[in-house]
Length: 491
Picture (cartoon, one colour):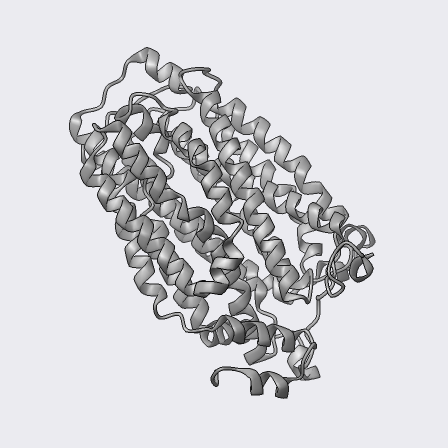
């Protein structure tokens, strides 16, 4: 099938089945990430450990993990598991550039998450912190090992830019729709209304994700695994120094990462949302149910992402969504949680553009990768997605740690529970200062991050049309001379 499939444009490479398998595997990988990010902070806070100690361990692990991410990105670009001497390993890895890495490592990721949540209840606090540190680090390592090839293959699955953008858009829509419903189901299961344990929900969810990851390993092919319009010398494998030069060359991805770091590090309410609902609104499901209400307008807006991007430009669309959500966050903070109906309405309005931004962000990385491939003749997808993996995980953990440090500073009382039904039964109250701090982590701090991130993106100058021309040159659709003639300026 492929390009001869009559149900799709003739220049598309992948079959419908292959795209579905990619969506399944990549979505499952992201769901695995969501399992830990959704439950980790709650799970650890419920262990009765001082909240600032948990936050400190998170930051230490991220410093260690920084080296894992960068070096694994280098190895993915430099080493081909498909060329292993072992016949069994070679057969398991199969063919391709990034799929072989995914095939031989993907199962390690869900295994690490399951081990994390199997923490024995009877351990002393020191033992729990050691268990947390060991398996959180293992999670980070296996996350990178899976994420780098899975994200990098977006460039190698097809040489058609329209097909790639369609894949990114559909993947984003699937992920957002599923994340909303799954997130609500998860919150409901551990809420005071049901009372399932966090451990049970996390392990069962991860096992389902593992099953969903298998089709990507068995039923997908890479159609754009090698670069065109480059010399033989440029196609040779390169050193770690060469990769650093590639990063230095790509100032646009560094600007994008800087904006993401500032914005995401200050999203302190993400991991604490259930506690915010429980203590500010009196019900752990309040924000989740409100999110469900915003589901329909969010999906409608998301389906128009490509049109919004073409109308405003990808960079400008990201700036606009960040600024809108940031302003709404400031308004939300000053309205306060006592006016529950009004504050939830403002929260919903401010969160809707975030669905569009999720997809817009996925457009930026391939553009900047094509720019680097064009400038250097080398495929540094692995190192860039390794950096993306690090930025994503590091900022999420910094946000969680920062939120916990804020709560600890304002007098958070340690709790020991298995779920919110258990917490409600105990009747554990928090001082007014801690509740006010919770509210700031939900509104004021994230709003500052969004506005600052929007400001950084003003320095991103790579034109969408130029990136598309570079992609066509890299895949051999047009010559380098034709690309140079069509660019809006010299890069």
